[in-house]
Length: 212
Image 1 (cartoon, rainbow, N blue to C red):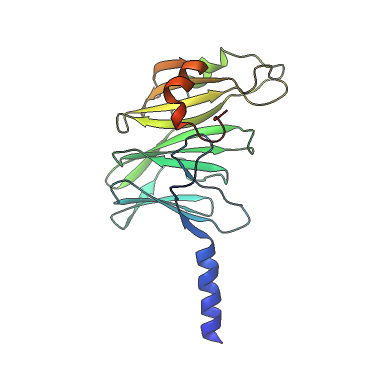
Image 2: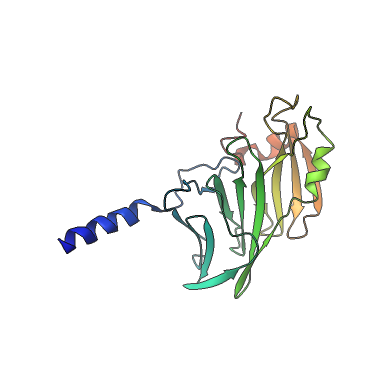
C-alpha cells in the first residue's frame, strides 16, 4: 500500500514539472520558454541557461535561481504571473521574463534579471520606453501600453522590446507596435523602430502574438 501511495505521489510531482521545450514558441519572443500555469495548481518549470551552469526555477508563482547547484538570492520582483515567458541571454549572465498581469490582453511587462556570484538582481528596463511610446498613440480611455521582450543583443548588454497599443476598443490604433533597443540595466533607449521596419528586420524572432 505504501509503495502504491509513493508511486502516485511521484506521478503527481512529475505531471507538474517541466522544462523548456524547443518546439514551444513564446507569445512575444519566438525563442522564449513558456512559463504558463494555473494559480490553483502546483507549477514547477525549470529553464536551463546556455552554459548549463544556471537554472531558473518557477515553483508555484515564486522565481528561484540556482548556479552550480547552489541557490542564489533573488532581489526585487520574484512573484511570476501564470501567463509568462522567459529567455536566457546567450552569455548566460541574464534572463528576461515577460508576463501579463491581466490575461492575454494585458498589461504585459518586462523584467530583466542579472546574475552575480551570489545574488540575482531584477530591473524594470522599460521605464523610459513607457513614456516615449505613449506619445505615439491616443486612446479614448486612459490606457497603458504593453511591453514584451523580443531578443537579446550583444550578449546581455542590450534588449530589443516591442511596445504595443493595448488591444482595447477604446484605442483606435489597438495592436500598433514600435520597437526599442534598450540598454541593460539602465533602460536608456538606444534605438527605435517603427512597426514596418521592426517587422522587416526582426520579424523572424516574433512569437505567436506578433506574427501576423
